[in-house]
Amino acid sequence: MSWLTGMVGAGLATLRDVLPIAAIIFGFQFLVIRRPIPNLRRVLVGFLYVLLGLTLFLEGLEQALFPLGRLMARQLTDPAFIFGSLDAVAAAVHWWDYYWVYLFAFAIGFSTTVAEPSLLAVAIKANQVSGGAIGIWGLRIAVALGVAIGIALGSFRIVTGYPLHWFIIVGYIVVVVQTWYAPRLIIPLAYDSGGVTTSTVTVPLVAALGLGLAETVPGRNTLIDGFGLIAFASLFPIMTVMAYAQLSEYTARRHRKRTG
Amino acid sequence: MTGSFRDLLPIILVIAFFQLAVLRQPLPNLADLLVGTLLVVMGLTFFVYGLELGLFPIGETMAHAFARKGSVVWLLLFAFALGFGTTVAEPALIAVSREAAQVAAEAGVVSRDEVAMAGYAVKLRLTVAVSVGLAIVIGVFRILKGWPIQYFIIAGYLLVVTMTTFAPRSIIGIAYDSGGVTTSTITVPLVTALGVGLASSIQGRNPMVDGFGLIAFASLTPMIFVMAFGILVH
Image (cartoon, one colour):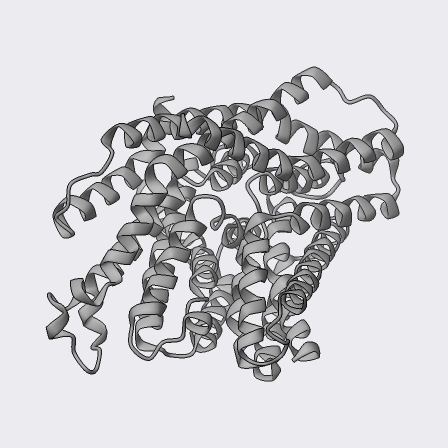
């Protein structure tokens, strides 16, 4: 019956998340707008579904995937795994020794982002607003690739110990240059996709990976080097989404040239 | 249902591959794993259904109502309340600010006792929540005016880079991460619907160009504010 108590806990946690939002919305609605909400019953049922959905979602993750994912992050960063046996642990770490970690970081970044509910929400909205020009899957895969690259590179940074801000500053420069060339319509959406990627699914797994690396790589400090993966995961999707738009514009233009 | 299952399939494949092929260990508690996966798939299905039924419509009707009412002050106040209210109780933020308090204690900025560290964590949390509130206010104001977003973002980047040189080294990582943790799964759809709703109810605004971008502001201002907090406190 442990899953039942877990479910109640997850439900309460979601409720605590929803309550302030509901209070603000209904407070403003009744005190400031002073107009009945159209289809109030439908909206309330919708809120209930969101609540129920997130509860099941979080509890399911906590039951099945998170424990295994966290354990995996620990095992993959364990020096005993990296160097075959504890006796073989090298005095100086070569960044390439951690190749499984980078691959895991890439794969877990990609796959958790595809399942991220808030990204799905933004993709649905963008698809509606753009009249179908932006595909739901196209956007999700572009963002997921960005997160994957970001987390793999972030793991590399923790292993090598290079300062975080150099990577971020270079990333900003790339974003600014890309903004210059990218189609105007995609720019706000691309900037947004940096922030939507890291929520319920990605953060817990990525945090475990960062912590595992910072704890086990010699010379790293958990408290200082453990941070930064989320920053990488929110920067790179901006680039990949703009690249996705540039690529689709480019192929459309080539297609037009050939047919016209 | 099948759509939600397809969303989840990559995670299952990745975990199964690393567990069986790389770490060469059996999958523990297969029953738990299956039940959990089923719960996740059901949860995602309900979430999407509720999104279309509740969160998107309410965000858009409120945007339309505010646009019709024509009161900028109330709209901006609502924007601030939405940003602040949804961030201050965000579990990911609570976790990060607790870790940040530990970093600060390690660096000797606050004393190591519980009360001082809890105080530091609460102050940091309030700082981030205020910064997200302001972010939504600035973002909504930009939609009203129709200003291009990139100037704001580039100015924000410049500010982040400049402050990085002044901020204490121990807070930089936390500051950069705090931009990503603020936007929860319920806030994102609501804020997106608000932006798109506003842009589509004001004449001359394009929902694609003007409607998106609120979340971008909400993930940029926390970095600036947390570094400012670091400079002031450390």
